[in-house]
Amino acid sequence: MLKRLITYTIVLAASLSLAGPARSAQPAGDAVLVTRVEGTAQAFTKGAAKGTLIRKNDRLTKEQDVKVDEKSRVELRFPDGTVMRLAEKTQLRLSDVSYDRKTGGKNMKVDLSVGKLWAKVKKLVTPDSAVEVKTVNAVAGVRGTVYRVNVEEDASAVVKVYDGQVYVAGLPREVPKPASQVSGPVPVPGPHEVPPPVHQVTMEQWHEIVKAMQQITISPQGVASKPQDFTAQEDTDDWVTWNQERDKQLKF
Image (cartoon, one colour):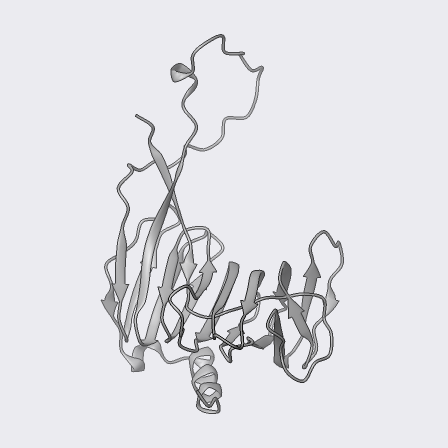
């Protein structure tokens, strides 16, 4: 029987996208508006070697990468009103963004490679709507909430929920069969560096419901902890305080 290796994706309920910076008073149904820039950040179009400096009121579209520099922050507003903020040294790709103003339907997918993301998500109003924040080792889905996601250099992650609920689950994918299980002649490679062992797991999947004022951690190998309570006092720092103050200015 094939074993499977689990990777994870963090799914959030909202919509998101990035494209070449362009001026716009309001984000269109397929664009994200830059509403605040502290310090410097760059947007990279797919395949481009150089990035473009991001400024307030720029419009970003799907398949763009956002890289936030040291001592910098960026705030993004999606077409439905959802807001996501990126801390310093954060790298994000806007994989997909769509929003139907007539029905309220939306589909937004973001890949968070490393760094910190804070999200205040506008509630979804159609059953087929979704917002996804993917990391290399986790998936979180919400129906309207406030939460944050941290991804470290070693690919470990933490999801903290401040309001609402987040569904976090693992997604398995197949691992190639060992050479001993492959029929027919097998070529013998010459001298080469042996890669580190791959962490394998069974087909069993996991999922957790993370409620308000709870957090879940995910190891670099995709092993998730049980949801644990945290207090506002122990969680307070400059990043959290700044986001909470910004959230108070939003009218949802």
